[in-house]
Length: 364
Image (cartoon, rainbow, N blue to C red):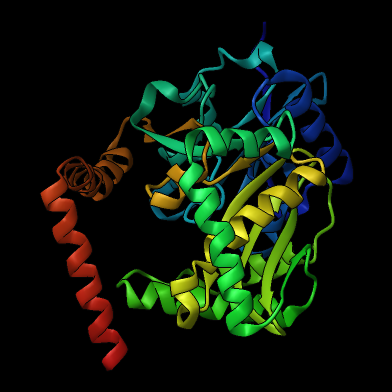
């Protein structure tokens, strides 16, 4: 098989034909879940808010046969498109290109490195360059919500019982509960963003919504109605008051969790858990077959999940000074993060430090 020709286009300039072919290739050539972060529409949306978003289009006989999205930074350092907010990354390739030379691909993109932190399992072109492997908890809804609830009764009976009790307590305290799946009101999204930003500040973490491109991306996707990638806002109300909300992305069959939060003043009623249980039920009713919580440890994820998918982090590099500079900038920090993650005492100290930083910021 000859090496395909590779053309570079701006991600925001993908044509309707590109969108259709990209998603058809994705559907026809992989058994992986239809994660919305891997859709053409997600890459196109990133291209509309970032000037550095590009797509390498692989062609044979002038026909597109594959797509590799990326962001190109200074010194030829590349990143997965949407890195920082994307929970699933990789290329969309025809099986005939599974043995493509990845270094040739990078050179065609004028890159000396390509960094990823949520590489999809099965991306064999890039997996040899992964340096970390992480679980992404998921809820399997292939057999419907009733089967999932039976799973909870068998494996997390206390979660189901406690959540139902908290629903009744919250209703008595604030008024009847109302759950809205697919909320379109901008006020609800603003409330969620406010809660989430406060949480980031409180825990000493960087607030992604202070980055204009992320705020614009969320707003853009909130208005999208593509079957391959659209914003999905769920809100739990007690009386007329929103008490918990979640904004994620969905395809026809996959809901990717993205930004959940809740009103801290009613935290004792576990509004987030109530929201998730109702959200999973509504997702199943709307055709969702997999809810992906995303990489990261959290007690609630372990309580709700039925299993795990795997994602990977690492970097593909060429040779030369640019690649060496990327290694020097990224690998010591990545190694330090890995050391902290793998040692509970260090991890606990890091969390306490972040919280202390958040307290200082909150009192400033």
